[in-house]
Length: 250
Ligand code: NAP
Image 1 (cartoon, rainbow, N blue to C red):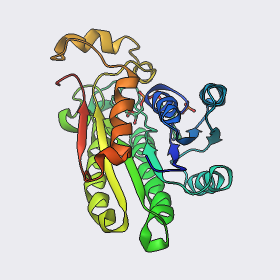
Image 2: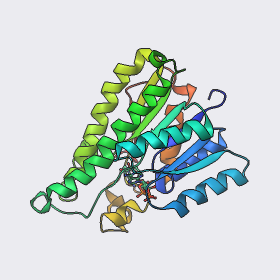
Image 3: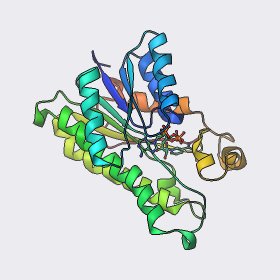
Image 4: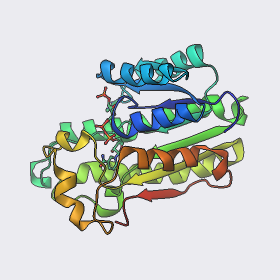
């Protein structure tokens, strides 16, 4: 990691984002913890970082709303200084159902956060980090999903399709920004113990499906965080447009 590394994590208040924020702070990053609604969770992450001697701020913004994304990055500029790293972690799914029951409003909500939000945050990061715009370079890690490969049949093909888009934009931006000092990579988590499965209507989902995982267990958010941090770090300096599956062999 270079000196004065400033990392923005979208959806950093809970789950994989929170684990990434805490581990990043331990490794010396100043961390901006973005959240949408749960201010208490984000503030708790920030407090834990500060108590350990690190630097962090919590910033509310819905990544699906362009003006809020612009304001989010401006607030990071003001409070932590020039951005050097971005983790596009904010992501949503909704209740498990088959295609026949999906409506356009739901599909739009999923795509707005998972795809539009990721693209908008990449844009703001590139405007700051690209050497083309006078920046010093940096790294972006997108949080995709094994669902991009499996398609999540019978559960949420809309969510899976949004993660397919995340994979595609990761490949495109990695090449678009490679000559401008910015590496763009992604992680594809499998079944990870977080609140997200409750949003799908099945809080105990990981324990139900873990028998289908070659390693016979679900993953912990910290196990995803460590892959993200490797991709952000100089340890992966020649790696761009790459994917790390953190999925127990699935
Ligand atoms: P989680 O525990 O449900 O946390 C999601 C986080 O995203 C929360 O902090 C939430 O903010 C934030 N968020 C949601 N929509 C947002 C928006 N529009 N703007 C800003 N923040 C928003 O989820 P998780 O399981 O850690 O998932 C993190 C990422 O990993 C997601 O992209 C997900 O698709 C991916 N993933 C998860 C799994 C898994 O098994 N858990 C597997 C594969 C991929 P609030 O706290 O304010 O609500």
